Length: 181
Image 1: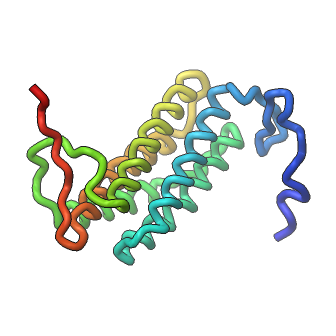
Image 2: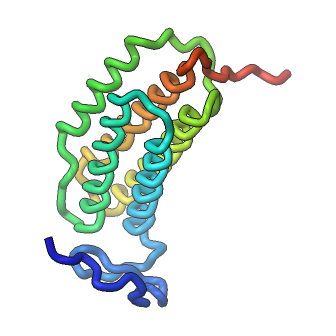
């Protein structure tokens, strides 16, 4: 593969615009650019989760997720394209089913925390929800492939369940919300 960027300091965004993969220039405040940024931030948060101690099968799944998120960023940078596949959602559904089998039913809301890996999973989950909202906002102006926001919805569920599993590592537990009255 050839070089994608010959230099990093391009100065092409100095006036508040950025380029899409199509060559089109958009304001950095445009909903499409905002959505791309949210997906990028989510991928960074998944990267932070991946440097934690994780079960190997979860690590493999999250590594694949990073590539899928890059596909989603590519889809957003090329209006009209559809790179997210139904198989991505089906994979997450399967992962969720397997992880949920190991967990007790929720009896109360869960607070982010418990240990570092669980907290990072919760952070990634919250960013996934924000990214999903950004995609729905963009979709209201420019219809997207329906799989794109669905993928983020499913991913946020997966990250929540990962957090629940990770909180229990080495005899740990989730942090349950207690009403302050």
